[in-house]
Image (cartoon, rainbow, N blue to C red; front, side, top):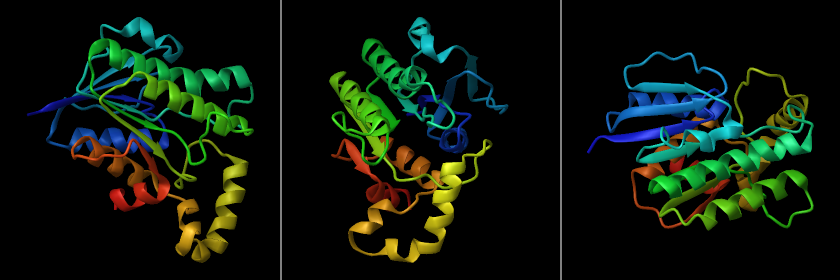
Length: 219
């Protein structure tokens, strides 16, 4: 059976790769994108809505598919205002999950972060953790929460913190191949996207998928 999918965050690093994978995948006959900006892709299977994602709930009548992929996320450097940060990293994924529940969409895949915990003292991890809890509260039958480590790859915007960290990681990367440290190894966006598509087309018991397992599935 040919399936339909919705992608949120299709202009981002991982989301854009995921979108191209879905468009090239014969199992998918139609892909809908909701975003603030155009993904600049022309394809007969693609339908795009340029909207204010903070008002996603207003588009419930358009939010219909077999699967929803949420690749929304920002950083402190890009979004310094905490209220706006919460609206993006918590608000949008939760709104999408609620629309899935409302419209009977049974598969929801969202990218979170390694270390996400709703009671964390770290603002970033706490926001992601609260998002995860609210997504799970919707009880969507096939919910997958990916918790990757630092995502490697070239972004359009320059992020100094990530640049410094990735440079250091490049120097000490060999030690992350062993034992428990392997879970913190940077992960490629292509690997995350491959994992997301695999999860929606195979039977997998776990809800939260940590970076090491994402790497194994995506490869």
